[in-house]
Amino acid sequence: MIVLGIESTCDETGCALVRNGREILSNQVASQTLHTEFGGVVPELAGRKQIEACFPVLRAALKEANLPLNAIDCIAVANGPGLIGSILVGLHFAKGLAWSLQKPLIGVNHVEAHLFAPFMGDEDPQLPALGVVISGGHTALYRINAIGSYELIGQTQDDALGEAFDKVARLLGLPYPGGPHLEKLAESGDPLRFVFKPGIIKHNPFDFSFSGLKTAFLYHLHGQNGRPQRDPIVSNTEIQHLAASFQHAAFSNLLDKAFRAAVKWQCQSIVFGGGVSSNQTLRDLVNKQAPMPVFWPPPGLSQDNGAMIAGLGYRRHKLAHYETIFSLEAYPRCSHGFQGV
Ligand code: KG4
Ligand code: ZN
Image (cartoon, rainbow, N blue to C red):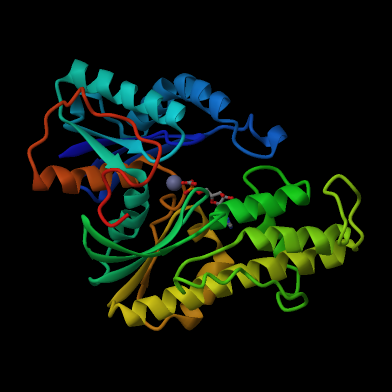
């Protein structure tokens, strides 16, 4: 069965063709560049750009897979959570395709799909697994009992991890999305030169708080009464140390909680998903310290993409009969259609 996966929940447009839930025949992603000058995604502009990108990205995906449109057996679309305008574009595009091809349409939760991405590699992670979602919009720990059965263990109370990277990168004048730029800058810095303390959440030790890191970074960069517009009061070399120290503090905090949760909830493996999971410094740290086997998304499946949507859509299709449901709705928040959230 060939599933077309469509992902349009933010500023990426992804279309992918996946055979039998695992064999990725194509995975095309168009990233919007117009947000760079604003230092973050402008929702209204993102939605408009999605309209322009849908057809070219679908055509590119069909071309890469060397398949005609009518080879598609089923369509899976991310109908949330994310930016409502962006989601609506992908959802209606999917509905139009499903109607014209007379194929089933399946709505997929995009955060759940991030958790599913590590299950698309050569080997299936052992269950129950500790799922760590680290993206620009979400940071959370789940116990994955089975695909479709999740228990929320902890989540961020303020910024998502990717969002914290993006905000710090913005303070340094780096382009959006800042995560990869900050990782590069941190490569030549000393991760232990400065002390950054992520927030402590009293009522749940497995929740996160990353927003204070950004303020601490600002103070290091511009002084206690500093303003982002001023020139930094530290040298370029110290900026590299700052970037490395920020990254180290954020990852240490994440991993400390994730590893403890995995042991406490008697997990057999740990899986990572979401844009930040492509960070090589994080992967090196995890591979050195993890108390049990770890699984990462295959190449190209960390950031938003259609392949993980198609993969999860296929699993859903195997479990239940789907038809083209034109009443399928878009939802901006996570609490809809994803057990355990
Ligand atoms: O999963 P994703 O593509 O979209 C959301 O669902 O949010 O994640 C995007 C986020 C951005 O915040 C981006 O800065 C971050 O992932 N990111 C990284 C890296 N690559 C992407 N953060 C840190 N290091 C990276 N190498
Ligand atoms: Zn995402």
